[in-house]
Image (cartoon, rainbow, N blue to C red; front, side, top):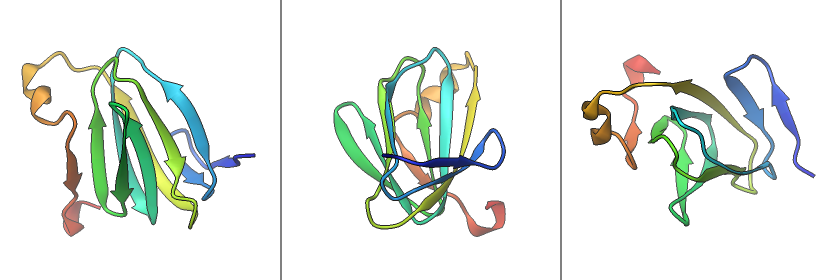
Length: 102
């Protein structure tokens, strides 16, 4: 059984065995890993998101989130709508956040 502890609406503590079922929605979602690592399933591929990394999920992209089965993790998730074509640069990419912006 996955356990999810929520401190505020966007900052979440996930247990190592956490599994969130696949979903999709009509807005962008940004996931930032603040502690340890999580697994993001998207495009039928698993991607490891490490501490200090951020991932942009495009609208209507089928995805899910799960723990790494080794350690609990903390994530910050923000959802937003943006119609600008410049957002396409960020889709399907994982970025390392510079230390001064963490």
